[in-house]
Image 1: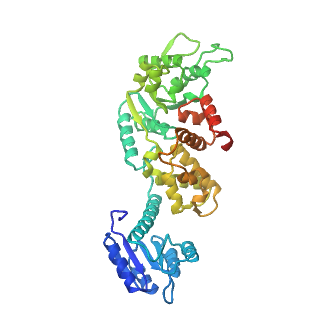
Image 2: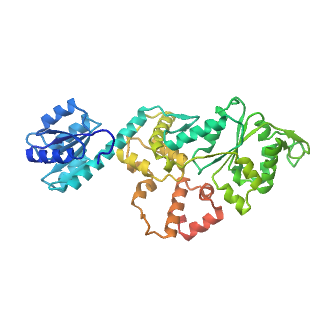
Image 3: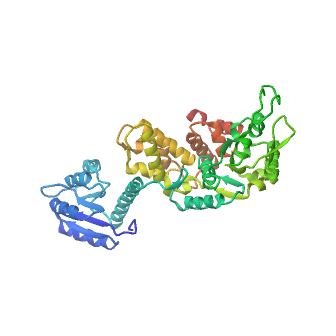
Amino acid sequence: MVTSTEKKRILIVDDALTTLEVLQRNLKSKGFQIYTAQNVANAIKILESISIDLVITDYKMPKVSGLDLIKHVRENFKNSEVMMITGYASVEGAVNAVKTGAEEYLAKPFTDEELFSAVRRTLDKLNLRRAGQEQIQKKPSGMYGLIGESVAIQKIFSEIVKAASISATVLITGESGTGKELVARAIHYCHKLASTPFVPVNCGGIPEGLLESELFGYVKGAFTGATETRAGFFQTADGGTIFLDEVSNTSLSMQAKLLRVLQNKEICMVGSSRPQNVNVRVIAATNKNLLGLVKKGDFREDLYYRLNVITIDIPPLRERNDDILLLTHNFVAKFADEFSKSIPQFSDNTLKVLKNYYWPGNVRELENVIQRLVAMTDSEVIEAADLPSIMRFSAFRKTGLNRTLAEVEAEHISNVLTAMDGNKTKAAELLGIDRKTLREKLKRYSLSDKL
């Protein structure tokens, strides 16, 4: 029943002694530390002397009502939650209670289970808000831009340190937006050769016809437009690290050339027959299953094993949601400073949505959402209504085992496209399909008109 390891303190305020005794007995049996008061004045004295987690107050009491107490608690004891109980139940009373700041509203008579459930929900919200406040007060811990305190990310930190202690080739795997380049940079800058070059290359962003010349350079006259000899990324990274992002997007012929670099530590510039030695550490990354591509014949097996000396698999954000609040605060502070705005706060419901959302675009999507919120929200508190609609409504979608495969696929495709801001190329990469297949699925599920 108790929602955290510490013993929660509950203050019950009711002018009916019988009600006080019943509530005190029932809640005490669940492990809570209970305080009681028969009027608002005594309740305030207790609040001023003891740190109370939850106030449960009656609605109608002599002289000062429960609504006045709720308002006082909200204005003066922001680290406490409030519930209202009443024997005079009405829609108007419930609305007033919620507007004033009560998290729960119970009409008498109520069952023990109804009471316990309401208390549990209210304390869960309190714990979430306190966790958010702790993250805000805490300096983000991390490594070269990687932030987190979850078990999953701490494991990544440990693997980074081990990989940095040697010069072996590293393969980083993980979904789009998980921070593969940040991990690569951390490995490089944790190494004793941190002062040497770190050269990132997006293999998927360079046309196949240009990739060879970009990687290995070219000599004057090698092709039309080659008016001078130019070094490639491997020569630029000589003595340091080259990061081959989305290495799975390279052709089989390019893979053969990369294999030669790994085997012989030499490259050959386009238009030249003379090999050049390069001393480069290779770190590669992919969001695809390379072994699956090997079995399909789309990726060279020998290159796969050359790359897969040390493997670091980065978990998606949904598997390390303990880090979401910490990341959120980091991004809020970053963009508030960038936009010269004060740092906004987040409502309890907003924090709940952020923690429970699936995050198909991972940390990149979270960063984009926070950037948009800080830029576009003028109020001091960001409410759930300020979040993108896909995040607000995902909790109300049809779930469970009663959905068809087509329904699940259509929803997932829609989520990924929204997370990628409608970019079909990035969405197709994340989904593990090509653009043609994505277009066919959008047409089949009539998603194009909805995006």
